[in-house]
Every structure is written in structure tokens, then in C-alpha cells.
Length: 155
Image 1 (cartoon, rainbow, N blue to C red):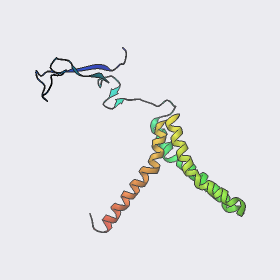
Image 2: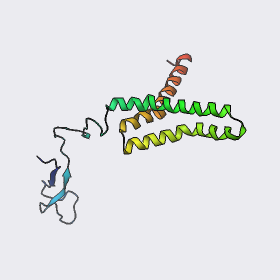
Image 3: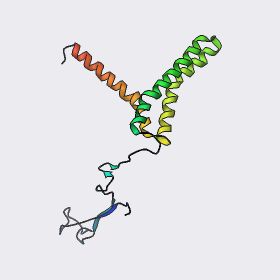
Image 4: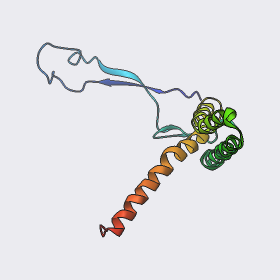
């Protein structure tokens, strides 16, 4: 069986034009709307579309999410610390270069990881990295607000 959207045609059931004016396509029984829609009753589809079990790369989606959430930021942090230690050990000539490189590890690593993940890798890796940058700080900020409210007697 071929997976193609079902064709839908909506026609008028009323005898008159509810908006008044000139006779239109409605009164002649013509088609009001036509087009194709995806069927929600397919075997592997849901209300939000087709559900894919795995991405094209190997490994589980949850595993890729946690690699993007924990391991990739940890690797960038370790690499940044190594570059900073090298910068502190050098004289004035190379210190600035390694210090700038240690600060650029995070933005370059995040952008490169997210772009790679959405283009060639597993998208759950990018979602994990975005959760590290957006989700974790947001949860910490909300926890800080709740802590302040609890100490001030707001709850």
C-alpha cells in the first residue's frame, strides 16, 4: 500500500449564499475547498506526524541526548581549562593567544556541535547541547527565585 495523503474535497450543503450578494460557486454545488491532507490513522503516525524510532546514526536517541547534555560540555570545559593553564604558564607573547582560544572553545564548540548534529548527526545530540545552554540555566534561575521566595516568607 502506498503512503500518500488522502484527497479531501469540501462541498456546500446549504441552498443559499449566507453572505448575500452575487450567486457564487456555493449555490451551484461547486467545490469550496480542495486539497490533500495527511491521514492521522496510519499505522506509524500520530497526531504530530510520523514517529521515527531512531535517527539515521547508530546509538539510542536518549544516549545521544545525554552525550550532548553532559559529555560534550564536559569535554569543552576540560579543553578550555587546558588552554587556560597553557596560557598562564607562557610568557606575555603567547598568553593572549591561548587565553582567547580558551574563551572561544565554548561558542565555537556549541555552534559546531549543534550544526553538525542537525545536518549529519543525531538531532538529540543538539537538543542535549541546547538544554545545557538554555534549560539548565533556566532551571537554576527558577530554583534561585523559589529559594528567595521561601526565605522571604513568600510561600
